[in-house]
Amino acid sequence: MIKVVILGSGNVAIHLTKAFLKSKKIKVIQVYSRKNNPIFFIKKNIEITNQLNKLKDATLYIIAISDDSISRFSKQLNLNNKLVVHTSGSMALQDLQCNARKGVFYPLQTLSKNAKVSFKKIPICLESENEKDYKLLEKIANSISTKVYKVNSEQRKYLHLAAVFVNNFTNHLYKIGHDICTEKEVSFAILKPLIQETAKKIKHLSPSKAQTGPAKRKDIKTIKNHLNLLNKKQQEIYKLLTKSISHLPIL
Amino acid sequence: MIKVVILGSGNVAIHLTKAFLKSKKIKVIQVYSRKNNPIFFIKKNIEITNQLNKLKDATLYIIAISDDSISRFSKQLNLNNKLVVHTSGSMALQDLQCNARKGVFYPLQTLSKNAKVSFKKIPICLESENEKDYKLLEKIANSISTKVYKVNSEQRKYLHLAAVFVNNFTNHLYKIGHDICTEKEVSFAILKPLIQETAKKIKHLSPSKAQTGPAKRKDIKTIKNHLNLLNKKQQEIYKLLTKSISHLPIL
Image (tube, rainbow over the protein chains, first blue to last red):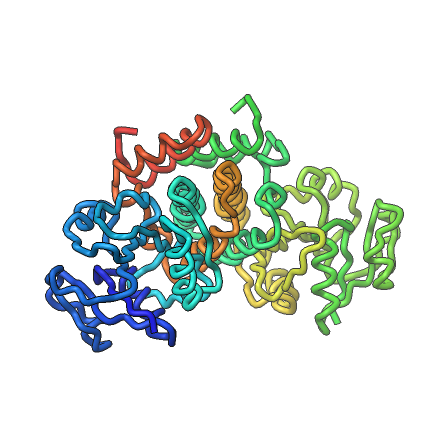
């Protein structure tokens, strides 16, 4: 049984603990929480502390707190020679500023508070200072997910950036689609199957090969018609993305 | 049994015919094809003609050809008093220039040549000149899809435009994510579950509520870090979309 201590009690801490509870190889023996009443952990009968000098002896310490706080928080840890990881996509391994063995355990997914998440399919990106620690992290990650990847700090930084495009920015395009529908009193539900299909296509086809539409066809007539229907802000986005797809100079 | 003639032999014609073949209420009695050898229809033993004056008597004539050709093509039809529809998202009902009763039968989906498509979940947007024809179109649409909507020409134009945002532009964001990964030799596969989740979220949550990320949080530090990692073209897109989400003036 591998003993794990979770430092933090937010979304990521909760989702990780839920996943570990299902694994027979891992036991969350303690949670560090500054919150007075971390309901989820109380319900699950997991020991809670709010004092860093009361941390129990464990194989792995997982810092699951906001990106900004990781460096400052890690300085307070006194876990010499223990393995400490953070769970952030945008922070480097070296942002952990403690005398411990360092690593990263980054689950790449949008983890909302109430959303049910099957960790099995969530990619976990791992990094460590040495091969032995990597093997340990790999074992732990494999116990909750089927998708485990070795990703260094430089790569992870770019991965996190790419995620902004495919997740945050994509969602904003859904929002613009939603706005256009609302304006004309058309049900946004009509677009939902198309949204699913667009995402599904990418499972087996590269985005380059999956590209369709007026910009791809360099269909200037339709492009101009569309621009006439949009407000200024939407026009700017339509133009820039169409230019990026089509390489048409005229826009 | 409702008799249907399909005018055209491309993707939409093939996918529609496939769907009708599964329905017991509809029979495709003839296909008009300018192509000499429309393999799919030959295989299915459907009568083929390349002469418009040989069109058979049917309840519905479905024009499934490229948007640009619809007006010109419809002028050649001599189908007085018959019900004729086109299948285009961007053309108006009145773009049908024949003496027939006019309608629109628009399946909103990306229909690729070899992709297997279950028509059951594809929204079909209908329009007609009168209520009786609408009822007929509705009956036919309901026989192949569970998602049938009444959408007028003005609304359909905007729906088609919204589809460009949620489908074509979204795919381009996937492409940028792919480019970033390739550049840093990270597997794009790591992002695929996130892409699926982003699309799935929208089934039950409005895009506004689903929005996350540095732009939403107005996290200027991360935004600036990200901009430093991108090339010029990517920066432009990142800035514009971040500005649109965050309303931050500084970018």
